[in-house]
Length: 140
Length: 232
Image (tube, rainbow over all chains, first blue to last red; front, side, top):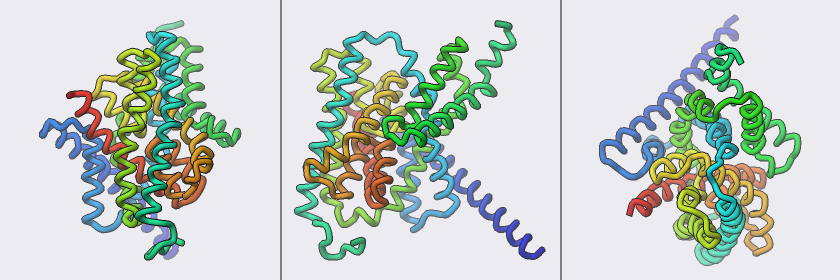
C-alpha cells in the first residue's frame, strides 16, 4: 500500500512539473508578445519569448524536468501544429505556371547551392579554429 | 447536404480530430515507407487536402476551425529555447566558425532562393514567401505575417526546402569532403530546419545537437533581420 501511495505522489509531482512547464512556456510567450507590442519591435513576439526563456534558463542554470518534457512533446508535435497551413498549399489557385516553375527551381537549386557553400565555409573555419580531437575535446 | 451536417463539417469538433487523424496517417506512412521524401507533413497534408476536397469543405472554414492548433505555435517556438540551452556547452569550443557560418548562411539561404526565383521571373508574393524559406515553420509563419507573405505558400516552401535538404544534403556534403558530424548537423539546421534536424538526429546525437542549435539560432537571426530588410 505504501509503495502504491508513493507511486501516486510521484505521478502527481510529475503532472505538477508538466503543468509548471506548460505555464512557463505560455508565460514566456505572453511576455514576448507584450514586449513586442510595448516596444514596437519588428521581431515576432514568440521569438522574443524564446530568447527570454533561454536567458532565464541560463540564469537558472539547468532545465527543469517538467519543462524539458513538455517542450519535447510540443516539438515532436510540430508537424501537427502547422498541418492546417501546409494543407493550404493545395488550395492556392492564383499562382501562374511561371511562378510554380520559379518556386520549384529556387527551392531545389537554392537549397543545394546554399548547403554546399555553408558546408565548405564551415569546414575551412573548423580546420583553422577547432580541428576535431584538438585540445580539450572530451567528446572523442 | 443538410444544413446541420454542413455545420458539423466545419466545426472544431470535426476538424481537430481530422487533423490528428491526418497527422497519425502521415506518421504511419513515413515509418512504413522508410523514406525521408515522405516526411509526416507531406503525407498528412495530402490526406487532409484529399478529405477536404472529397467532402467539399471550404479551406477558409477549415483553417478557421483549426484555430486551436495555430494557438499552440507560439509556445512551440518558445520551447525551442530548451534544446538551445541543453546544447550551449557543446558549441562553445567552435563558437567562432559557427557564428561566421550562421551569419553567412542566414543571408545566403534566402538570397539563393529569391535570386533564382527572380531569374525565373516569379512574382512579388512568391519572392516574399521565399525569403522565409530557411527558417523553421513556426518562426517562418510569424515572419510571413510581418513581411506580408501568403502563409500557406511560406509553409509549403519551408517544408519542400527541408525535404530537399534532408534527402540530398548529407550525400552532397560527404562528396565535398565535409562529412564531419558537426558540419553536417549545423548546415542541415541552417538550410533544412526541423526536417533536417530530424534527419541529423538519425545520423548521430552530436549531429542532431548541432542541427537543433543552428535551427534555433538561424530562426532567431532571420526573424530579427528579415522584417528590418523588407521594411527598409
